[in-house]
Figure 1 (cartoon, rainbow, N blue to C red):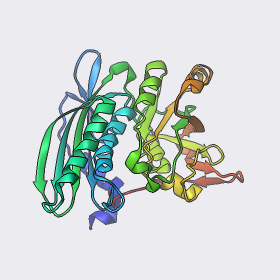
Figure 2: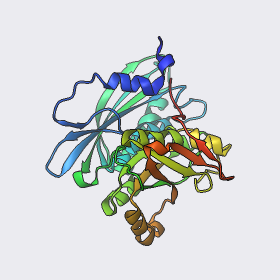
Figure 3: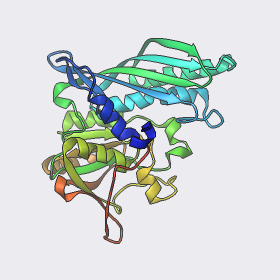
Length: 303
């Protein structure tokens, strides 16, 4: 049996079963970041992400600065999805020796720009030569214990929200997006957010990840899902990756308070798209015609 025969989701679950964890680890694999015991009031967040030439960017369509920006911002988006603040990053890069020096300058200019924007200290890394450009970032952050949000907290009756719009990222957003760090911090400081994830692999797949971790079902509505003007179609919008929007749930009482006190103040639009159900009710999309369509764990998967 080959890796592609079982797919990415099954492969991650297969590997995660055998990881060594001691009592200092609160949450290991299976969320946007690992969560580690740190201080009385705060937890440590730890995440990493690779940016691979030909998979996450193409040199013909991305500048070195955009590649550096995206490499760090993908990780910042993970920290945001946990309700945290990014602090320290290590950057490892494999580069082709024949690349112009200006490429390296531009790459690190993009990394520094993102670091300056989101308060990240670039504290080191590694470098090697290879036939393909790979940028790997490891990022440490912190989250107040009372504000930490995981994927596993969604409960029946919660309402489901998404920031911004989804779809069409391939037309440029995936290289220039702004992680929703400010929005996430505003949410966790003022409201009880039960579950959250960043939309990196498509709205349908990433909401499935919340439901899988929470042991829940959900119903979402086509009429309410905000689709980007750059999306080729509704279907592609809900299954395509790299939107880097926040997808989150909160209880009805908190949602009413959010609508009443905060929604109009948010710089980024926030849209109610559905509700969390009992697991036995399944995972469905209500189309514009009122038809209920069963949804599966489909989106951007590497295998």
